[in-house]
Each structure stands twice: as structure tokens, then as C-alpha cells.
Image (cartoon, rainbow, N blue to C red; front, top):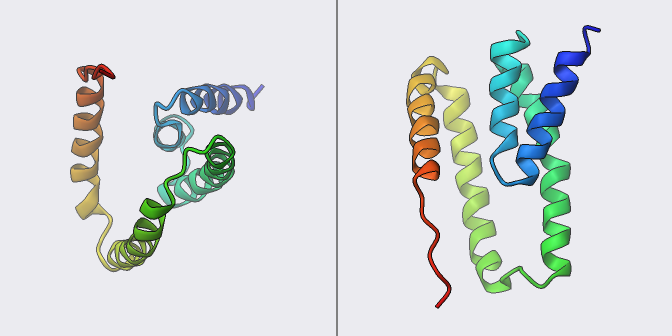
Length: 122
């Protein structure tokens, strides 16, 4: 029965992720807060969780003609450089420096999402 809680957490965050709620971030938080997984391991699991989901999203969007190739040509090189720079900074700085600002960022993002209104397509 020790597998039941991780199974439920994975199932729940998977459903929320499909709805666009940010299941990967929720999975990371649940693993560290409720399952006692250390942060580095949880981040690795989160990455493994994200890669197939992102790959399927890319395939689905391409199939439905939802990818803007001009935007991708600009975003991919800049995004790659930014990811490399962020990874270098993240490995060079003590993680304690990022914990509180990241927590505040998550809280603010959640609050903004709750109070966000949809724009009409007129």
C-alpha cells in the first residue's frame, strides 16, 4: 500500500497538467513536501515527467497547424542560450538564494491565474 500515495499524486498531477494547470510544478512540490524526496531527485523526476508530455504537445500542435514557424525560428536559439545561462547560474549559486523568490513567484502566478479574466475574441 506504500505505492498508493505516489500513484494518486502522479495521477492527480497528470490530470491537472492535461488541463494546463502546471502539473509538473505541482508534482515537484508534492514529491518534496509529502513524499520526502530530496529536491535534486524531484527535479530530475520532474524533467522526465515533462519531456514526453512536451513532446506529445509539440506533435499535437504541429498536426493541428498551431505552430508559428517564424516565432520558433526566433525563440529556439534565444531560448537555448537563456537555458544554458540559467543552468550555469543555477549550478554556480547556492540554491537557498532561489528558494524564497521562486516560492513568491509561484504564489503570485497562482493568484494572478485565479483572478485572470478571459478576453473575448471579437
